[in-house]
Amino acid sequence: MPWTDHAGTAPGTVPGIASGPGALELFPAIADPVMDTMNFLNEVTARYPDAISFAPGRPYDGFFDVEDIFGHLRRYIDHLAGEGATPARIRDALFQYGPSAGMIRGLVADALRRDEGIEAAPESIVVTLGCQEAMFLVLRALFAGPDDVLLVSTPCYVGITGAARLLGIEVVPVEEGPEGLPPHALEVAIKAQTASGRRVRAVYVIPDHSNPSGVTMPLAARRELLDLAAREGVLILEDSPYRLVSPGPQEPTLKSLDRRRTVIHLGSFSKTVLPGARVGFVVADQEVVDAGGRTGPLAAQLAKIKSMVTVNTPALSQAVVAGALLAGGGGVTELNRDTSAYYGNAMRTTLRELGRRFPAAARDRLGVAWNEPDGGFFLALQVPFRADNACLARSAERFGVIWTPMSYFYPDGGGEHTIRLSTSYLSDAEIAEGVARLSRFVESERSGEEGTPTS
Image (cartoon, rainbow, N blue to C red; front, side):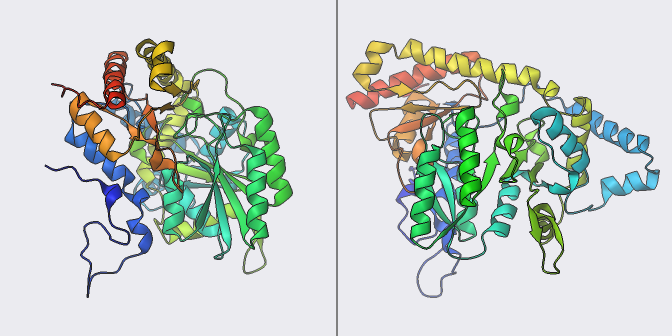
């Protein structure tokens, strides 16, 4: 089967849809290359099932047990009964649609307080279908006109840029530094947009072990970012899914430091409980005035939007997550001690193997370098060649190792000589062999050789 490079699709052509007179017209953002990123990675992974893949940011499932799902459901049912719910009320809680804002907001609020030091009233929370829906709801609510702009650190998680483009929102990237989004660079970007007649409505940031680069923002920069946002009237969209599955102490979340309701906190239980539940949440405690002149939290307006999109987050998924939170004593920290240790070991093993396969002399000769995150799922590896889809195809086919081109994560171009490595889903043996294959691939690309296909 010939290799298809989706990045080479002709501008304005929607893959899989005929063009020409009478052709079906679709929203232009669907043809944006960012929309094909995940499909492309799934395709290359499926095409080379024997390759070792550093591409997916999937949670490790070795600690999952099917019986846990039934235990979590029973625990939540017992919790409802303990609160005085009748059998009919419990039946409705599990079988019916339920409120758009979610039926486990109180437990989520307790977990945020216990795990993160975030004080959030249940009415300021909306339980969503994963974090991706939370992004859609927030963007749709906040961006009211064509002059509203979203700033993102670049490289940036494709989920937020894809959501923005589907909603017709302009995205302006701000270059990430070695310690995350630099507040001074953000201030320059805000002033430039203001001078051009646009309004910066919000800035999206992953301050902890970011996807894709693995960078973490230090405490001083967090405080400076909060001060800047408050001063400029810009909201911060904080997305930090890797904090509670990373070993060791973490910097405080932006939301826990927020005293001026500048931060909208986006969250998910995909990494901390299980991805199959597809349960996320948003903390939006900003006060807004509705059309009737009533004041209430932004979350109430998000729930209105959700009622017209997914109606509600599935009750069974919420029940499983609620039972897991109860099993963890009201939070996820205790639940994730083993998984955090696993992920921490995977990252350390990857860094050790990179150092072994690319000693200092080889790094200098090849022009290879990488950062050293202390948590999360990802790190960035600089390579001396263009790391595009065709290059990835050679890596998968001839050397049996898959990674993600970092260029996927640059909204306005960039990252052509960097790759993202995900460490979360591999064993120590797979990491060692995968890095060995990667080193042979880099040597081959650097020298322009064809390489020898793996068995």
